[in-house]
Length: 193
Image (tube, rainbow, N blue to C red; front, side, top):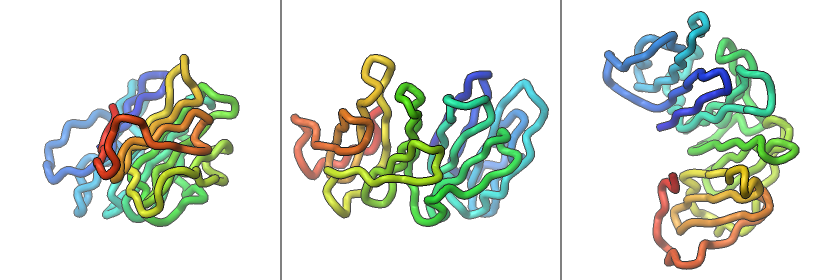
């Protein structure tokens, strides 16, 4: 489902598999859990201990590039958004510690850095590392958010949200969204990458 890379080149992969031979190097877990969830890391550093994601349904990962390496977020199907600051040795819940979080995105191109979470029917934004979140406006109620895509260096306040009812764009860092012209209403947009 997801892949993220931090500044030193550590790769974090999250998703589901029933394949016992899933290739990993220095994994958080060596085999899929009974529910098939996998979160693995690859690094030249020592092996990283396994964090128990049993039946949580890892849906997304995002690396926090605004702080020293080792901070990243894990989105889950049922248990909200989790954060590690020690490269995955321990995880703690953010203030969104329950519910379905299908996607997470991060940008350090703004000041302060922004963490974007696509929840069941909206986008939430945190500027304090997940301690608090503010809900965006402009995405119609009841629409599943499948992916949140932060802008690049040339447009750091640009954010896209792929939803069950089209593609939405924010030009103010995720505070408000509006539909993208040219994409008919009702079209599901799963992934804008």
